[in-house]
Amino acid sequence: MELSRAIDAALAVTLASGFIKPVVFVHIDWPDNPVWVHSNTGEIEWNGQIWAGVGDLGSLTIPEEGEGIVPSEARLTIMGDAETALDESARQDVRGRVVSIWVGSTETPGGTDLVGEPLDAFSGTVDVPDYEDLERGLTAAFAIDVATGPGARSGAQIVHSDEDQQARFPGDTLFRRVSHAEKWRTNPPQFPA
Image (tube, rainbow, N blue to C red; front, side, top):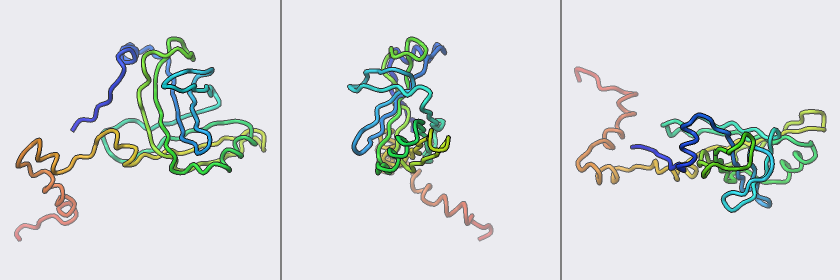
């Protein structure tokens, strides 16, 4: 089974050239005030929204993309004055809210002029919000962990059943053998019986 992802032609050319000016878009489905931000400065109008730039006030760590289906986490951090960060972390019930992350490129470094359409890079739900006082009540960091799971991965179409396998390869016994794999691994057949 192959997982593939559609990429805009102009963005693909830019990525292939090796000279990219990256921009990351983050949407958090906040209960009373959805967040639409990007990693550069200034405003970018894209996907029907106005995205505010956080520049150096934000950071993002997303896991490497792999072929496994083990859930992974991203971590978003926004720094600001302590009162705002504490208020935001205290008043919002954010656990389980949807987070979407796109990666793109701009024409100029740190710019707001997009090259093609950004690529859907990661999505998940808010796992654990975290507040950290950095400078004795003056500066604070509000961080959230974003966990993937079945809902987040369903868009990638990784669900494959025995019925799907039989439709493509009639008579295949893959799923019958997989169901016994754990038993054979933990209790291998003994010879002579």
